Image (cartoon, rainbow over all chains, first blue to last red; front, side, top):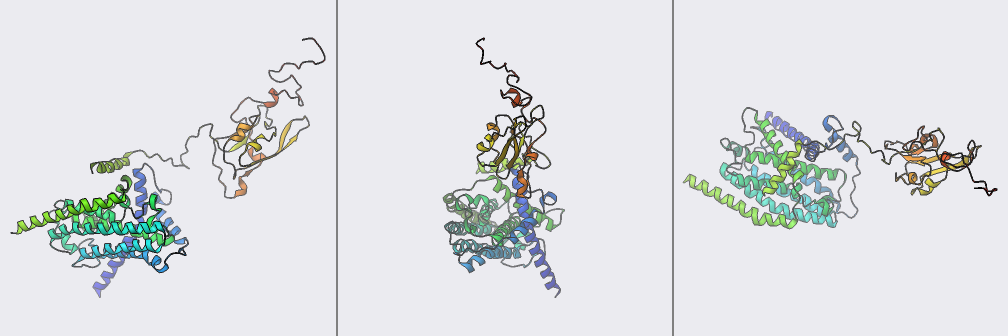
Length: 318
Length: 171
C-alpha cells in the first residue's frame, strides 16, 4: 500500500512537472530565440514575462474549438491526443534519479522506441483527416521522415545497449559511472541527436510543418486547444529527447557534488537550449536532401558504428 | 558540416550583442522633425488663424478624412467655421500639408493618439488648432498676399509696391 502511494505520487509529480516544463518551454524558447536575434522577446507579463505562458494558455483555451465541416471528425479529434499520450508514456521509463521513476521496466529503451514510433500516427492521421492538400503533404512528409529517422534512433541506441549490456535505463546509466557514453559512442550520439531532431520535427528538420511551403503542414486546419495539444506534444517531445540524450550519452543523474536529480535536470536543460539554438541558427534543408542524407549517410554510418562497437566488445571478451 | 557548426557558434555569440529593441513606453525613439504624425492647424506670427478655408486639403485628401466649412469675418478675411479631421481614416500621407497654400495644416512628429472609442478620433477645430506657428515660422499669408482686407489695403503688404493708378499716363 505504501509503495503504491509513492508510485502514484511520483506519477502525478512527473506528469505535473513535464506539463509545466513543456508550457514553460514556450516562454524559454521565445526568450532564447530573441536573445540570439538581438531582441527581448516576451518581457511584459509578470517578472521577465514569465506569466506570458499563463496568458497564452488562457487565450488558447478560450478560443473557438472549430472542426472543419469537410474533416473526418473522429480521426481529426483523436489525432492531436496521440502525440501527447505517446510522448508522455515515454516519460514513464525515464529514470530521473536513483529510484525516482514511474516504472522500472527491463525493456525501457524498447518502450521509448515503440512510443516514438507510434507518435507518427498523430501527424499522419491529422494530415489525412484534415482533407486539405497542404495537410496531406505535411502528413506524408511526416510519415516518411519519422519512419526513416526512427530507424536511426534505434540503431544509434543499440551501441549504447551493447556497451551497457541491458535494455534497462537504470542499468545503462549505471554503466556510465566510469565514462559517459558520449565518448565511446560519439557517432551514436551525433546520429541520435540528428534523429531526435527529426523525430520531434524541430526547426532545422521541421519539414512536416514547413510554414513557408505548406502553410502549417499537418496542423493547418487545427485551431484552439487541439492545435495547443500539437504544440504541447512538440515541447514534451523536445524535453523527452533531451532527457534521453542526457540519459543515454551523458550519464543521466551521475555527476559530482550536486544531487543526482539536479544533475539530470541540468543536463536535460542544456540539451533543450541546444535544440533551441539550432532552431535559431540553421535553415531548413530541402525534402530530398533530408531523405538522401538519412539513407545514404546516416544509415551506413549507424551500421558501421554498430559493427565497430560490436567488434571491439567481442575482441575484448575473447 | 563545419559551416553548420560555425553558424551555430556565430548565433550563440549574439548572446553578447546589444539588443536593438527600443523598449517603447519607457524609451522612445527620436522622431525626425519631418515625421508625418498628428495633424495640427497653426497660427500666423500675429496669433491669427493661418487657415483660409480654401478646401484644398479636403480635396487633396485621398481618404476624405478632412471636412470644413468656410466663413468670413467682418473684414472679409476667410477662416473655417468648423474644421474636422477623422483620424480613424487618416493615412498620414501628408498631401494636405503639401496642398495647403498658407502653411496652416501641418503634420507633427507625434503618433501617440490611441483611443478606446472610435468617436474620440474625430478631432474638431479646437483640438487641431495650436497657439504657435508649427514648423514654418514668420509666415503670414495676409501680409504677403496682395489682397485687401480689414486693416490692410492694397499695396500695404510686405514687399508690396503701391498699386498702379490706372487713370493716369505718368509712369
